[in-house]
Length: 330
Image (tube, rainbow, N blue to C red; front, side, top):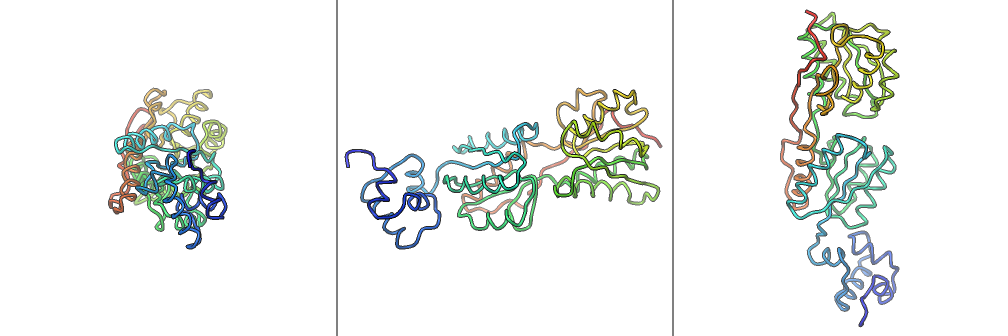
């Protein structure tokens, strides 16, 4: 043929649907008989088309799928920076799909990236459900989760329970026994369960007078701001927030109501966001290196693509950053 051979041409030659040829090119399911016919037609015609041709020859496209829950997040931006640097060093490119905090869309994005023929998929997940495990176990390419963990998946993440313990031990050392924990729903196992439980377990250990009141919010600044009045009804000496962003909503409410931090109430969070260094007062936090997490995640998916096992150290380092927003009441 003088003109460029298309997928439709291949389909017509072997009397199969165009979608069957696409599935074959993307390592999807095609009957053994049809796969043989398609392969012979491709070899006979010298069929070539961008990434498909590269995949047929090397079994790699140089593309990594990346699924993220939202784009308007400081942590996601740093995470993507870390991934992009490592992928670029290894001549890979990322394809980013956004789930918009919708689990079903997240699952759909994973499936879509697989159909597009990427070499592996990174999933910055909101939760790892039974559907996630069922879907990823059927894929013909490696996947790695971050943000959440499950024994049936590959993952690289923060040790949220340890992060909670670090903060709990700190507040115990500062003498606080009446504490409000402003956190998220337990649907998010990492932040809503592990981080909260780590804090409560540590601050209450050998500290029988300690009482922690949990108040539920979400990750947004405004919801935290609106929940602050409910938190204050408990009359705590300290408010610990599941993220620094939640802290910022609380700090705004306290400032507007002329409640001094930390003189009247201490506030601390998790994340180590840069804005915590310029807030007033500056924010005590357990800092996570999100760019490093991105780098380690990229290294992990590239290792899996090469058939290597993930390194045993699958969780990123944590650091308590003590600033001005907490005072000792011993």
